[in-house]
Image: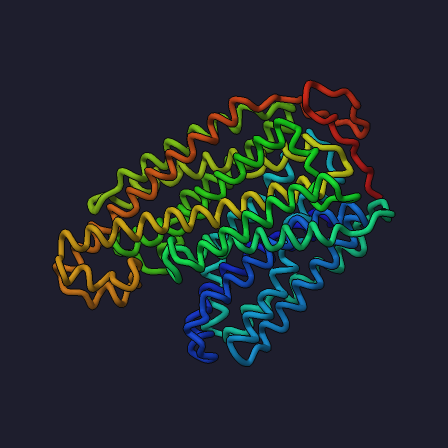
Length: 506
């Protein structure tokens, strides 16, 4: 019952953005405010990223169950208010409230699994959570389109309420964890500095090259504010009585390596899920719905390998092989995807995507497992939230950097192949929807197909180069065997923290 409730909570966090993305054209048509459209997503993302480490620390200080229930309630309040929004400003504000709750959902799920399940058994359950993530990516656009077409866009938010109520009731009734009460107060200064730093980073990666030029004064100001806030945050964490992100957890080599691997995995995964549908629609002629279904080879491979990795880890207690194999498969898959051109068939691209998906499946939950195994039980929430945060920041950087490279390459090729006409077509945006593409003259349309192929080539070459860091980091992972008994030995090995004590539930 606890696992079912956790899976529903994970589904809520992952499914929401996918559903809302499909409903956005309808929302804009009713509420207006097209110029503020990006803030509906950005506000949610900012709130999620900024609140993630805070929820993890609150769970460590005051108890996992209370923090998790609070995040669900806040998410549901934000969902209900978003569904009742009367203008774009209200929707943006309510989405931010929803994002604050979402920041605690994934962290809570992983930390509770860490509390209830022995390290050796943990990979199996976290593999199931990776399956939920894959299903959300596949089903989100389909569910969102169906809800919007039949019930209206407001139900894209209201659908969270019954699901959340089930999760809330189940967690309240069947989850029993020891209560905690920290004598130390909340590190408010640390929270403010970290929030300002994360917000600045996300805004730089969101606005850079789109809303503002990378060298503009606004972007430079945000970079300066972000760097100053993060430097101040690190300095303060060494002096705070109860730091929101204890720096001692980074003394563990494995934890630091998993943070790096999680960052790169987020960088690659969200970049791939952004540019593959663009390629499929512009070059292979897929519809918007079909392009989502055509991602099935990648997501399916990710699901299968994640489950297999979890099962093998449970049976053997060993895990180092998976980051190494995952890094190698990720590099190979990204390189193969960079070879796609205007003549690549859907079967061929599907095989390439499956290779990449298999690599990501080896990494998705193993990074969380190793990170949790590298800290003491009292830092379980911080470890879970930090790993999630690094993956979120990686996705922001991946979308921004790969997007900038893609847009630049598309515009260059369009200018080369279609001259002034091509330059005019992509002057505002290098990403054309299906309707705009069909309206182009044949010469411009053919040029655009070649331009998108060139853009995806550049983006995936960059992704392959960045993924080399994953393989290098994986080679330095120190395998501390995972034990399955309820009482873990307190032995330490080198710079690694002792395997965690497992709390017995109920």
